[in-house]
Length: 447
Image (cartoon, rainbow, N blue to C red):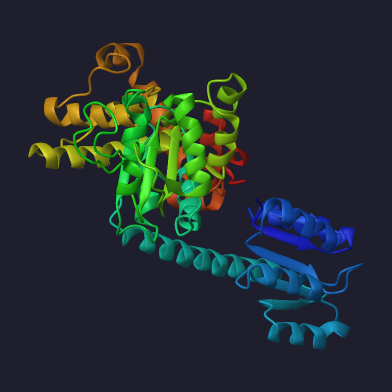
């Protein structure tokens, strides 16, 4: 996504502004008319700032202003106006425009106004994020740790869906934290004061799964010596988490589909219908659509569960989060075992970053616990002594430098100026180091 959208039907002006913005490291996209710009916004989302000429072929700049502010009243819209359009520009200010610039204008004026508008939008977005973070921090649920784009998207999605009743499907490899995400959704929902009930569908014997889920009456089968409330009833008013849903027997899937559709259950051995008010979050590590095609999972149940699907990334795809996650797990383990959290050295961070973590976050947490107990990293990746012999000090330093620059570029969405400020490097120095490590800023811009 670009920071700025610029609209002017004069090609010479567009070319001049494009060159000036590129020199100032302002990411922008240029259009000759408002219609094309609105189509791009519909596809890619709103930019941080919109700059538009008032007099355009087709939709005018005033129409563009009204459309943008209807979508988000906090987006700064800068109007470019000729002398005869001053009264229209003043009226547009009353209607919510950020500023107007009269033609012909010095390029410094436009750049200064654009930067102020970008700063204003950044502040607005930061305040919105702080409010979301505050809302999340006020709940008692587990924190979702990480700053990579995929985790930020997941956090934002949870904020938007948590207060709905939509059932949710979590898809992710073993150890990616599916139950943690489910608990986070529950704790940010109006159901937080009621039970969060988790059951692993693969851990329950096939002949007992319906009794576990729906309960049974006394005498319903051999060994049913008393009435028992099942997981669905126990979750009344709250959230039921069905882990490893792909392991549920096909016969049990038929009944589950009916329960999800009708929101009533029958205990085993009973004819009484019990209404239920719960949210169901299911989790799987396999492609359920493919499983349905292969006949191992009911297709109708897949589509019933697939209202909202959250894809949880494996740890190897969010390596920038590893140091933060490991430090968090160190503190938790130190508190649990009554020990001090040991300091971790640069070479050990490199060892953590070099591992692919097939066990994902769960494997990282176990590594942190062993580090607290044993004072060293062990049982994963290559032996650190061997690795040190194979990699010279200069190579290790270069690798560490590359990871720091990558992390900064990622956090700054590819902005060279912000990365310079974060790393306290001159522009030329940063560009030289990026070229040395084969880094391209375009790879770190958020889509």
